[in-house]
Length: 264
Image (cartoon, rainbow, N blue to C red; front, top):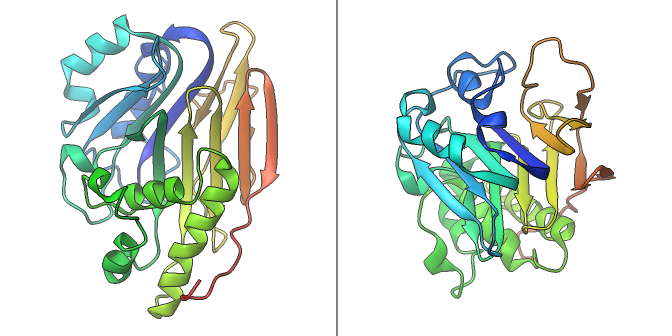
């Protein structure tokens, strides 16, 4: 199972989320406490926003704890909005193109969980990506497909609706193929202005997700697991939620992919 962390607020060095806390993302990459499955540590990545609308992106297939370049970058780069991810494959190959986050234009996206019946619906799912977007399909993961389908569904103008429609389309494919495997996800995405997060599952087993506002940093961390043992102030994101983080303001809305038929 993947682990991820995102931050939005006053600029900080990436290491303040990625490597310095006692239970940082790097620590979670080999010692996660709230995973249902093992952490494979078969890739990591960071997308961060700086002076330009499009995010910077660094990804590799090495274990996060053993890459000195990652530690060097996180100790030097400061950002007010970034996404960081440690990958645990659910079946696709270990490659840089399959590492999160994924980017398109000003958008960045990362995901933990699974699309039910992916091995069976993969070809049909790829066909939901329009021809104009398909050249951006670099890897083979369900996560990248979900992201590009959401882009096609209008992510620029309606982030929540686009994600609901994208998830609904993949659920419809899974049902049509007779797959009983659930859809489970936590995801973070950003357009460089706001940070969004989702916690959702078709059963009651959505991966864990927390957020916390820090008055000291004047920023908010959104994480798979709290970054410090025993630290107070972490709030659990309810299952079935779409969250909008804009400075200290938080909106938590119901995330409700509408059932679709396969012809929809």
